[in-house]
Image (tube, rainbow, N blue to C red):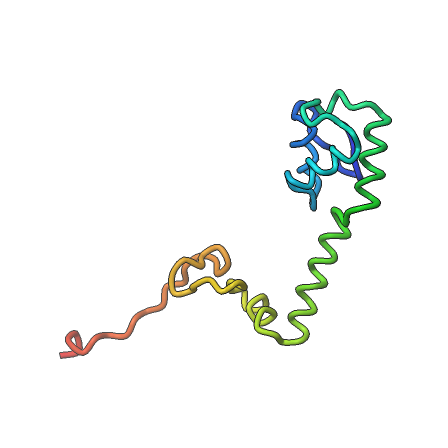
Length: 127
């Protein structure tokens, strides 16, 4: 497996897809990087030469924040939101959706499994 910016990218996939295995590089960015480095998108990752790999690595290091540094940056941004007690920060703290989605139904990914609460007895059942 070729190694780019400290990440093993898959051998048998096209280079444009293999680069998306790096945290911080999506498909669009991958295409831009390959065009800037002058590498064919359709070539397999195993067919890249050492020169091409070094060009890719140097370009990515120079122009993008990737992997651990990017994860750390995102964590710091969320911590800052929590510290200043803004709305988004309190949503992060409570584990609720941050971007305005409804929570009466359909927030299971953020809220976790349903916690059933015993309901109150209705007036009809009390009689």
